Image (cartoon, rainbow over all chains, first blue to last red; front, side, top):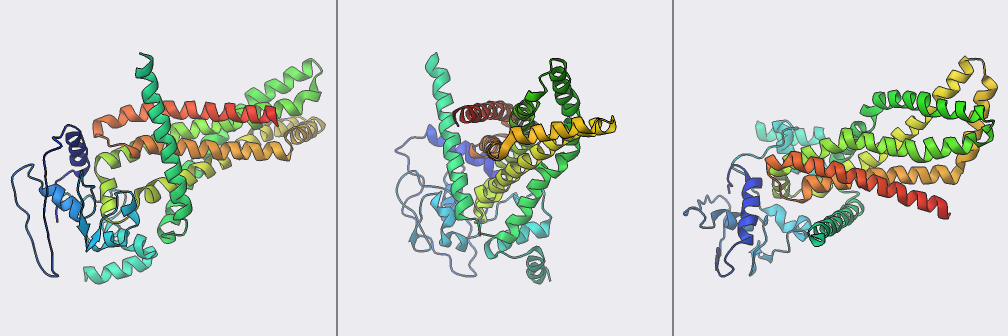
Length: 134
Length: 258
């Protein structure tokens, strides 16, 4: 999955848009998307057609304005509760701009989620990541 | 006109309160989560808000000792009121000037940097990136800063007070007035008391916690554009000063009541 170059700005703009949005406008409806291991998908559409909204919802990074959304066969909780939602970790999301943390090296950026989720030391994470580099 | 000023103020107070509660909740709930990642970050923040500011604080402590303590000792000696030396020292340096000065300096040096760092991170989408990686931004970005600032201000206040009073003791001993130095030390110790020192410690921790909350709230809790970061930094520092004065006033009331 991919996002635009500056998701922070994009998200702010989307929130501003949402405030003025037409409540009757449905962006995403009746989408049933299954991605099997090894499959490669491309989501295409016109500008403002809802591609980013679809991807953000699929990754559990945004709340639906109305209606419901299920991910990994489970109803997605609210955005705040989703931080502790185990299913959330089953979906990876790569921003087009990388969104790397400037204060970390590339290897540390790659290792960060692994270290945080598995409580690894820097040396352990570096060893695991080294397997990927090689 | 009154509502136009009052409503945003109330909304800010509500937002700050909610943010403080969320941060406290995350601190308690996730205290054992990702220790190998969080402990180095907490140490880094303590170094930034405490150890790195030590040279500046030693300079300020010497200036405080020279200006305030020296002037007070000299003025009280002139009117023969040296009996009030201990309580005056405690009120001026230990209770009031020490903690407040430490809080203001940390707000200026570290609080401003906090708002700019977090505001820029927010504007560049780093918070969304953390969420995408399954990392709680409050736990990863805010908790280390809150702990670092609270412990940093606490430690720096202790050094500031020791430096300010120690400088006068050193001057007295160096000038051959060891008896005066001993009297000053005893008077300060008597005036402070254990309860007073505990209250001063609690005040320092409260300063650190709320400065971190105010600066992190403005940097992180609201969507920002890059061009808004400087304006938000000014607002956060202003509100940080107001919060420090309010906490100080609250502790004065507590001192008077108890």
